[in-house]
Image (cartoon, rainbow, N blue to C red; front, top):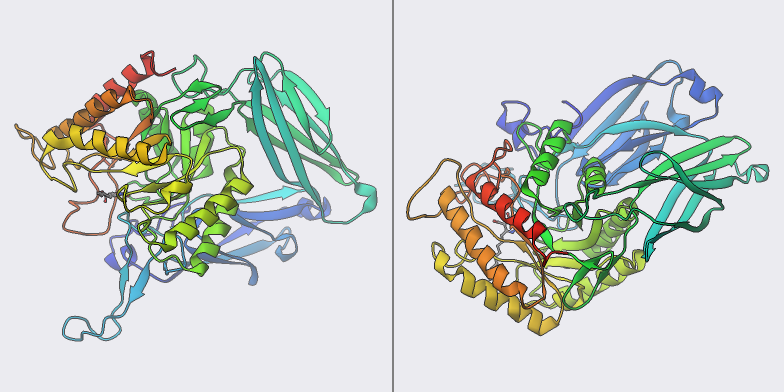
Length: 555
Ligand code: E9O
């Protein structure tokens, strides 16, 4: 199997495509003798493996990880043979349970008239295909035995001065008191010129006349990044890490979201990591194609629906000024057990640790469409908000609801109200004439009840490319265009009310789903096809987003 990639769509075998359970990867690799002579610490790092992974190096267990969307690594220094062949073995299990994120379960039906004995049915409540495999790159890297373990950066602005606060954590594996390291932090501008330099494992750097990090189309150079070079020097060597840093300030009140004190409106969509053949495997050509399309649309934001995306995708967002609503893998959770809460807390902790320094990440989304009408969801989400805020006090915390304003129990704890709604699609199918009325009434009701900013995180309609009717009818491109334009009109009248902070279409591109009679070859709500070619809806969205970007209301 190729790595990185999902294994499901590589062969022509439906058993491989639909496989649930353990699969095995194995390969040989060589490490230079020099690494051992130089007393290097060698780490094996996986960008992500879906879902559970056990890793052995030369037959000895290196690590185990459960969770399909975050990186994990193991110090394998003492497991390696230097100068001769090594063998890495990875066992991957795609099974989801009621205590994984997302949830799923395997059922063994006992109706022998319909199913042979031992037959297994795999169920889950989210609509995207449960792709599995080694989805992101696998690296070997080395550090000295005294090394930088973590860096935390927060930024602020004061008039034209940028303020960067940093903390460096390090490990001293040799526990050698003579090797207490020295830490030097140097800031470089984008063109490579040195701005300033300080020493110490924590401190504050002032950048006069700073270039702030701005979202795409609000400034001639959006996504401006400085480089923070952290240099940890000890008796045994030097560990250097270069961290891109965007200087920006996030704030919000009951109606408005601000970047660098400017009201900011989200123009975007939900996405998926999904493509032909590769499934959820990282693909550089696809990544760059997607960002070309995002820029072409004039969008300035997307939500990583419905799980943390590859770090490579967020590197691009940082550098281009695309705002990210960073979403956890808790899609459609329904059973709020203590065990699930513990898992969710672990995931949020790892997730914040991974993405906390990214200027593109402007909001944490704890979940998508949980059963937040249930009473148990109240305590569950209040605990998660508290944890996330203690991990990161700088960003707003939210989750995305599909419940009604009267029934939802958890939105009350959130900073921003995020709503998914499908008038004229899942409700009142075919009646695009009702969209404006329903959207206006619905959004006003949410704001009135909670007095918080409102963001529409999903709306739209499915369209099969090339299908047209006049008058428009469901599944045609015409119907998708009418659905979107009716929403645009509703959003325009609401804009005057002042509490709407953005609009996000579902979805950026068509994506794979399990086989169902409501999915003609997948979810077809994309602005683009799965092959990343535009539908009619992409053109009208482009018109809208560029117009919004250049209108005075938006900055
Ligand atoms: C999540 C997304 O991943 N939201 C679903 C999308 C879909 O089309 C799916 O692809 O299945 C839609 C949820 C519809 C909620 C409607 C709520 C209406 C309540 C009054």
